[in-house]
Amino acid sequence: MPSPRPTQLGSSLFLVTSLVALLAACRAVPAAPLATAPVAGRPAWESDNPVRPLPVPPLGSPADFAATPWVTPEKVRLGRWLFFDPRLSADGTISCASCHRPANGFSEPTAHSTGVRGQQGTRKAPPILNAAWPVYPVWFWDGRAASLAEQAKGPLANPVEMAMPLDAVVATVAARPGYRRAVAEAFGDERIDIDRIAEALAAYEATRLSGNSRADRFDAGDEAALSPAERRGRELFFGRAGCNKCHLGPGYSDARFHNLGAGWRQPTPGAPPASGFADPGRAAVTHDPRDTGAFKTPTLREVSRRAPYMHDGSLATLRDAVVHYQQGGIANPWLSPLSKPLRLDAAEIDDLVAFLVALDGEGFADAPPRSFPR
Ligand code: HEC
Ligand code: HEC
Image (tube, rainbow, N blue to C red; front, side, top):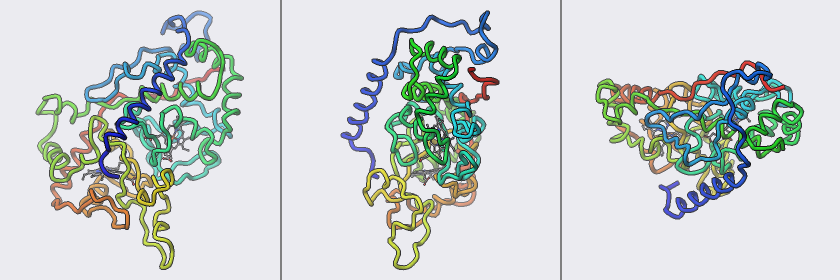
C-alpha cells in the first residue's frame, strides 16, 4: 500500500472520534471510588486485583489516556481478570494470556498460536503494546477489526482459539456474583453483555505500555543511552536502510499493509499465482488482489522478546529479519516497491540488530492474578 492519503487519515480520525464519542456515551454513572487496600468483608481474590490508578505512560510511549476516556481503572481491573481467565474458553484451558504472554511483550515465542484442544492457528499472536494509540485504527495482521474492543470478540469465538460462542462467554461471566459486582463497579450496573466484556478487555490491553527504552532515552537527549553500535544502527534505521518508511512514529508502525514476501512459496506450475501465499493477508479483507500477501507493520517495541518473527514466524532471529531486508524481501508478484535490496555489510547488519534490541523498554510487565471472581 502507498503511504496514507489525507482522505484516509480523515476517515480514520472520524472513526476514532466517533468510537470515543460512542464509548463515552455508554459510560454510566461513575461507581463510588474503591479503596486499593483489602476491604473488610471482601474476599481475597478481590483484594488481590485491586483497582489501581491508570499507569503513567513511560518516556516515548504514544499512550495518552486523555484521548481514551473509556479506559477507567475499574474497567482495567475487570479486564485484567477476564484477560487471564481460562474459564472463558470452551474447555477451560485457554485465556487471552495463553497466546499473548506478558514475558513476550504480550506476543508469544512460537510461530503459530495454539488454541483449545491443541489446535494450531496459522498466524502468530502479535504483541499488545501501546495498542490503543495506533496511527490508524486497524487491528489483526490484516486489519479486519476497527477497534480494540471489536477485536477482543474475535478470539473468544474463533473455533481454533477460545471457541466459545459469545452468549456462552456472557453466561459464564454472569454466573459469577464476583464478576457481576466488578461489572457494576466498572459500568454502573450489573448488566453483562459482550460489548461490556470486550470493552473491559480493551481497557486492560490499553494499559500494557512500552517506553523508556534506551532508544527513547537517546531521543530525549541522553546521548550516552545508546552504545556506539546502537547509534550506528539507529543511523541506518532512519537513514540508508529506510526502516522508518514503515516502522515510523512513537509506535514504530505506520499501521499500513505491505507485502515483504514472508510466507511466499513458488506455486506449482499452472496454479494461480496467489496460491503462492498460504495466507492472503490484507487481500482477504479488501478483496483487492493488489493486497495479496500484505500484512500490517508490527510495532518494533520489545521486538527482541518475541522471536520468531513475521505473521507466520518464518524468520527465527532478529538477524534473520535484518538479512531478509538486506536481500530486498522475498521476490513475488506483489512485493512492496519499498522493499529493495540494501547494501549493508556484516558489521552494519550487527549494528541494526543492536539498535532493534535497544527498543526494549518497560511498562507492560504483569503476572496473572492469583485467583478469579467467583
Ligand atoms: C489461541 C491463541 C490466541 C488467543 C487465546 C487469543 N489471541 Fe489474540 N491473537 C492471536 C493471533 C494469532 C492474532 C493475530 C490474528 C490475525 O491477525 O488474524 C491475535 C491478535 C490479537 C490482537 C491484535 C493485535 C494487533 O496488533 O493487531 C489483539 C489486540 C488480541 N489478539 C487480543 C486478544 C484478546 C483480548 C484475547 C482474549 C479474549 C485474545 N487475543 C486471545 C492469538 C490469540
Ligand atoms: C515496506 C514497509 C517496511 C519496511 C521498509 C520495513 N519493514 Fe519491517 N515489517 C514490515 C511489515 C509489513 C512486517 C510484517 C510482515 C509480515 O509479517 O509478513 C515487518 C516486520 C518486521 C520485523 C518482525 C517483527 C515481528 O513482530 O514479527 C522486524 C524485526 C522488522 N520488520 C524490522 C525492520 C527493519 C530492521 C527494517 C529496515 C531494514 C524494516 N523492518 C523495514 C514493514 C516494513
